[in-house]
Length: 209
Image (cartoon, rainbow, N blue to C red; front, side, top):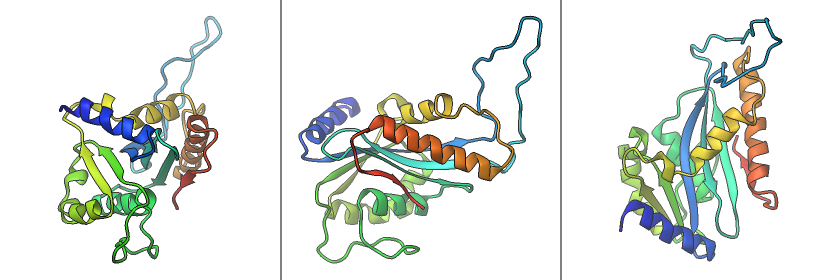
């Protein structure tokens, strides 16, 4: 069974409430967002603001669950690089919901299992294949968390890509931000609006600290 067929089977189980399905990915936001088009009066040249992008990006790590009884969009936005420990901690705390103290890498208590099995779809980025992930994969599977790696060059199979596109082109009308904090706030607001639009009836619209 190919990747598309495997995902279809997981989606069917998610729709039946047998398994949770999350699409995980990272996306970067620069202080000057792409401008596809603009308007100006006839004879007037439009001026589009542009901010320096060096060391001023906001990176978002997110996971989308759009099927099953508990749809949700969870994310965390940071103004630094996203690395493998951060992704693994996000998987353990925000998706698997492993209990634990903040600031420590979540380790499941003896005998603890997720209330419902979970499949996490992700691409083949280097941080997703880090030794840290390989070392915890059996442990994750034992508590009901499974990783599904997409084949190369298949972003269309990762449904959270649609979220990034909508947030960047529809939910952030201001296209240039003068500070990282201003951009960070705008990203958080846009992600919240997208979460509400994606799942208007859910009570699980979560943003991590």
